[in-house]
Amino acid sequence: MKTTMSYLLLLFLPLLVNAKLKRTTLYIPLVHNGVNVFDTKVISPPLVSPSSRQGQAFTAEIYFGSPPIKQLLLLDTGSSLTWIQCFPCSRCFDQNLYPKYWPKNSKTYREQMCETDTGKCPYNVTYLDKSVVKGTVAQELVTVDKLDGGYERLYGVYFGCTEHSEGTSFIGTGILGLGVGMISIIGEFGYKFSFCLGRISDKRSNHNLILGDGANIQGHPMVINITRGHYYFSLESIIVERKILLDHPVQVLVDTGSTMSYIPTNVYYYFVDEFEEIIGRPASYMPDLCYKADDIEGLDTFDVGFIFAGGAQLRVNVHNIFLPTGPPGHLCLAIKNNKGSFSDVIIGATSIQGHSLGYDVRRKTAYLQKQNCNNK
Image (cartoon, rainbow, N blue to C red; front, side, top):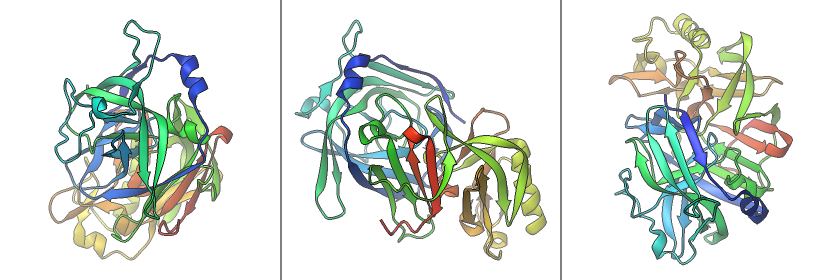
């Protein structure tokens, strides 16, 4: 698992704070990519970049610059910096499938000024697996397609212009960071946002992100503990057909940037024991809990999930919580044992499908509910 070792961002603070303008509402349809699993790298914990195995990713198509260049950004509640690759770059990950953004060709690109020797605002993100993203903070015109066929333009959006990256498992062209930070895009929308992730197995399902006053701030309330710019919730119980109360509450991150959930060993074995009692001995326990596909497909329907302090629940049908990440003919639980290899406990996108989660960051409250995401 990959987590940030250091995150350096040198900014001329008064300029950034005073320049932020409150925007109203922005609705962004999300694209579900069924090709990549996010389970090996955490960027600005717990943003996870994908490996090449089968799984899920949720991305937003956003246009940068003038003329506009389409970029595909990974939706991530685990980091605050929105960044894309900028060309030419000293070292970039492969982007042959997507348009390249060249700042020099944009009429609306503006480098941010800082009190540094160069006058620029550099950032340097180093990950636990030694991957690195470096660049400078800038402002740009951002354009988003609307459902009615029109488009929305946002001028002067802060973003990271990445000019150097080390690592091999990135998806799309960058990150849409929704964590708490001075230049996080959520600050331009009053620190309110919501996302709804439809059922991954249903190709007709919609997925969306809403920024600003129009965010879906409804459902069962949960207290947000904001630490190091990340959103933590108190997990009290798990669900495997029945409710199982944990010995002690666990602080967890709900992370759209991770397909998988990563939980402590003692909690993981609650899942193992329950599935073994219901299904029988698995094909493997480590690194994943895997069964023959026929064993999972033949199960009667029941829920698997998590219960938070105050009673909010994430419940996913057992048939949607297993993924083809193991040997051919097998399905593996999208909840993994972190084996003490990193401190954060993560609930990933597979466990969030079929739910809406709204954040009112200033009030430190989130709202969770089951929802058909095809209804805006």
